Length: 113
Length: 114
Image 1 (cartoon, rainbow over the protein chains, first blue to last red):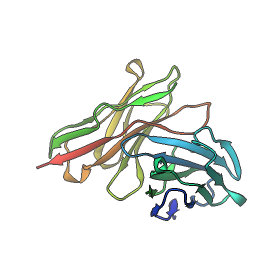
Image 2: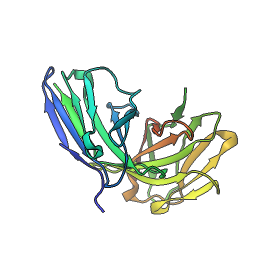
Image 3: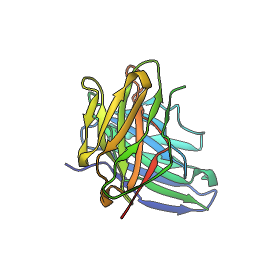
């Protein structure tokens, strides 16, 4: 069974540019989560999808971040325009409705210069 | 606010020595508790979890953790460290009856020396 995949693995962009991160959850997992780790700090929750609906977006830092999950399969996280403080590792995770365990992808390392 | 505290951002042990990584959480309701490990250039991998039942849980690679409600702790241990255990370890909680997000500690980087 394929795990959670994320693309790209690394992204280096200039301040003010736009970047789109993609996450493909494990097939059949209705729940999809985005997290972020800024260097040296804890991994922080960004938002949670149940199928295509946003269940909880309390962790989204500001309106420069837009997450979508059209069709309830893969998800994208767009940062526009990117700022220096957006640098970090963005993790995606998924789980089934009755599962207590979230499965994580390898993360996307975003560097904003 | 709910929080997770991991004491020690860096821990160094000798190969063969006991590994003890500490985790405390704040909550009035016992949460689900997890330890994840991240090896270099890899994603987060679940080591073990506590949801209900036996408070001593065993995970992969010889690790175990004990849920102590009175101490609000979930410390991770391994009797004998191996070089391959060098990684970053994250304690996380998930609060039942609320949103399904995980709340993480700041992580502990484990170094194993010869």
